[in-house]
Length: 343
Ligand SMILES: [Fe+2]
Ligand SMILES: [Fe+2]
Image 1 (cartoon, rainbow, N blue to C red):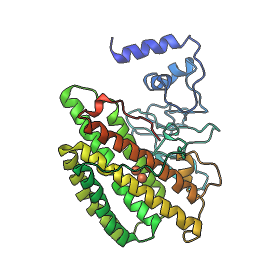
Image 2 (image 1 turned 60 degrees about the vertical axis):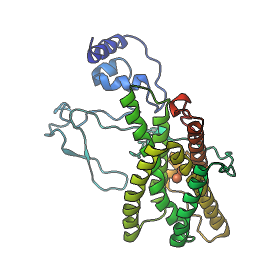
Image 3 (image 1 turned 180 degrees about the vertical axis):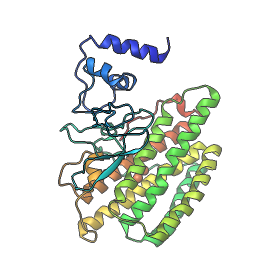
């Protein structure tokens, strides 16, 4: 039986089986099933709570013209939606190929406003993590990794000095690279060897995504100037390729470098906090994106954001030193379960 037939059969089965209430916002087997069922089937099965999901095909090519006031709609075209809270008229692509727009509601029923992350990606940072931990280099390779990072800090200090918001924003454009490179290389290795990865692909991609969210957050605090954007392009071109080659040659060295980079990041964010506490940097209200991503309480400030970002960096430090240690023991990463969801 094909998966589509199986899905349809299951939908029919569910249509007369009481289905427990869906947990709020988290994608489950039930919510995945929704994508396989038609709206009508899902409604019969009680799986289509309009308070959590927007009507899937309103104004799409598959909608009933009578329901939509006979408006002529075409697939993949932009349809006008009612003015938003700001009063400005918005245009939204309502459907491509019959795929319903991905819209999610918050627990209070209001629409989830972020498309770059979803409620199930959010978390509360563990601020109790030890920020002082340092991996003492013992091998030549470790010392090379440490001195490489120290050498990279020197031009960074000169360029940014104590402009920490700008510094953080720029450094996050680099910090988000290693996890993606490592994840991609492990992914390809898994395919080549017909073998699993022990969860490390996901763990490294989680790190890359988390770092990118740091960038999205600091973009709300500081805007890069044209020459800073140019610098990012140049640095990314060099760093991506260098890390790619470095990871191919020695993953234990590559992870150790990132471990030390994260230690430096903790130091930078600690200095950032000192400047906020001293008044050198104004402690402005936290950006809305940060409130939702880290589930921060209303009234949180930039200081709270920097504190949770610093905690994230400490977790990245641990993950990368851990990965390097696994390699140092002559093992492959897949032999040790990855610390998934380690925040
Ligand atoms: Fe970061
Ligand atoms: Fe990090």
